[in-house]
Image 1 (cartoon, rainbow, N blue to C red):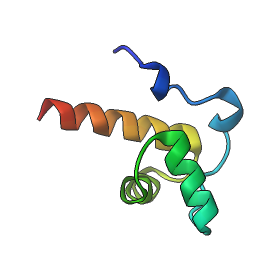
Image 2 (cartoon, one colour):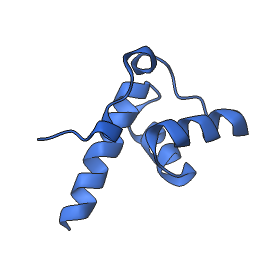
Image 3 (cartoon, rainbow, N blue to C red):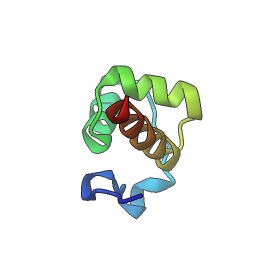
Length: 68
């Protein structure tokens, strides 16, 4: 499966935790992961808050939604 440039999370961010405790953090992660707050919260609740896992979850979710 081909990854697009925007799907690749920088290495420095992969081990960080996605924190949803402040508007600034939410805005930052929404911008970095190219998603809206609703999908960010859904991903964190579904898979946990490790940035690389949240990113992968969002990628798979986008691909699944495109094929439906």
